[in-house]
Length: 280
Image (cartoon, rainbow, N blue to C red; front, side):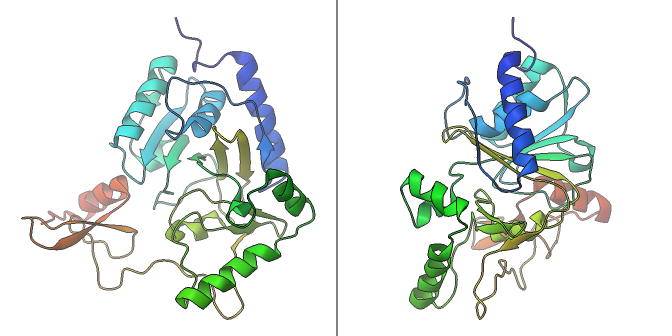
């Protein structure tokens, strides 16, 4: 017989206490006692512990992986949560009250009554420039972020532009540099002054952090090399015709050449329903 939401009540309280501190200090990494779960590290144990600690019996849950509601990761995590809680699950972004994601933020804007939990593999943004944990703690405490800007400058020297394609570092509330998780740059502007609460969980690294609603979030950039998102100029989703969403490259229907499809499968499906678009 499972406890409701699998974790024991003391574990849930410990996670919730860490969440409260994380919300009070936006972008700050709060240590927590990460528990063992019946899934492998790397499958979202940090995000799942947040979800299991917050979920109530009346919750409506959506879990998706890189925008896909039916990936192996998303389906199995949903199955585990539903088995231990009995809550309703949905693939419709607007219906969900609690959402858990790996590597994407939904294309549909989230509301103030929705919470988005992100699975995080590496929560420390300074790991790129400083491998020692003791030093990264000091750098955050002193707001000593010069090395991050040097790294961006070196990237420009070698490649002519800032080439980070995912997990783009941001400055939260003018204070802490934060890892955004491996979401694409396309999703980073959605973090700024959003209506909803963002919660980030890293199980293997035992860290939790948060972006509360209406919080200023700025991507790191250089004065003469501003942050920019990916562009899909002239490309459209082969299924719904959208040219204003994040697109994945896929084999073209018929197996000849390449085509593009919306990463967010629910957005794509709702677009097709609304437009009566038959696809190709």
